[in-house]
Length: 278
Image (tube, rainbow, N blue to C red; front, side, top):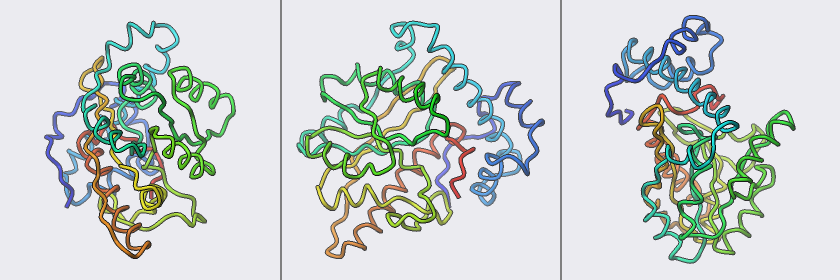
C-alpha cells in the first residue's frame, strides 16, 4: 500500500491543465496511464483525475520557467529557490568518500537546480551531474549548456560508471537521476518494487557503494507556490551489509527505490509521469 499523506482534492490546477486533460485522449497519454496504474487501488477516480490535471498544470509552469530563464536575470530568479537540508550533504562529505546524490525528474528539474551550487559552495568545490543524451543535438546544447553554465560538470549517462568512480575517489559529489528506466538489454539492472510495480532499476548506485563505500543521500525539488521552489537534501540512506554481492545489490537497490518513492509521493503531481517507466 502506498504511503499517501496529502488531500489530493486540493492540488493546484489551472485552466491549461483542464484543457490538456479534456483534449488528450486517455489511451494516448502516458501520464494518465501511469497515474491510473499506480493509484488505481489507493485513490478514488476523482482523486486520480485531480492528480492528472495538476500534473498537466505543473508541466505547463515548468515549460514557462524554461523560457523565462532567457529573459530574467539570475539574481532575480534565484530568489525563487530555497535550499534546505544542506546539513545532510555536509555530514556525507565529512566521510571523505565523495557523495552519491539520488535524484529524479521532480518539480521544475530544469530550473531549480541551476541555483543550487552558489548556495552550497562552502560545502563542496565541484558537483557532477549525470544526464541522458537527448534525441536532438541542439537540445543537448541548450539543456546541458545551462547546467554547465551554472557550474555543474555533466557526465553522459552512456558509460558513466567509470567517470563516477573517479569523481567519488576525488571526494566530489554526483547527482544521479535514479528514476530512469534501464535499457532492455542492460546487464546492470534488477527487477524491484517501485510505486507498487515491478520495475527494472539500475544497480549502478549499489555497485558503487559496494566498491567504494561512498555515502548515498537524495535530493528532491518541488514547487510550493507559483514562484517558490524548494531544493531539499534528504538524510543519508544507510546501506545494509551483505557478504554476497548480488544480495547487497538487491537489498540496497530496494532501499534506494523506496527513498525515490517517498519523494514522488510527497508531491505526486510534480513527478514526470509522461516518461515510460514501466
